[in-house]
Each structure stands twice: as C-alpha cells, then as structure tokens.
Length: 121
Image (tube, rainbow, N blue to C red; front, side, top):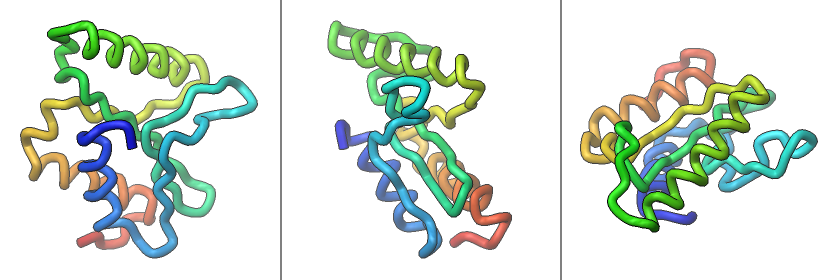
C-alpha cells in the first residue's frame, strides 16, 4: 500500500468482507483501455467496486505543499480516466478518515452492495 489512509480503508474492508470477496491493490482498472490503476478494488464474482483513497487532501481539494499537489494530480488523472470509460469510483478523501464511524458505514455499504444486500457486521 502506498499510504496510511489506504491501509486504514483496506483494514476496514478486510474486517467486513465476506469470505468470497477479494480486495485488489493497485490493479489496472481496464487494462485493455489504459494503464491506470485503482487504489483498491473490492470484488465478488463478476462485480467490482473501484475505490480511490485520496490521502493528499479533503473533499475541497485544497493542498498545502508540492507533495500533496502531485498526489492530487495523480488522482485527477485517474478521475479523468474513470469518466472516459464510464465508471464512477468511490472516492474517499482524507477528511472522511477523521470521521471513522462514517468511514466504516461507507465500507459496510460497499460490502453490502457487492453481497446483494446480505447483512454485514
């Protein structure tokens, strides 16, 4: 994993994922179209949920230094790719990590979506 925010989201998803779910790290989104990779991909059978963890800024996209600016530029490149191929990724900005209950609820909803609405603990 490339960042602590990614690790946190991964650990939450791992604790909730059903036994037949996989969590891919930095795998190509659509390799036949381009080389862009999702931060995390939650998969179950033929269903996939692409997750982008934007650890360089909050939802307001304000950066404070060159390192954060480069991180935002990388995300915006992937965001444009998603738009081009018609995929809506789940975007988790840094400020959501400051609200752990909301983050857990989001992760729970993603697992439920892929599980066909089975109860997730």
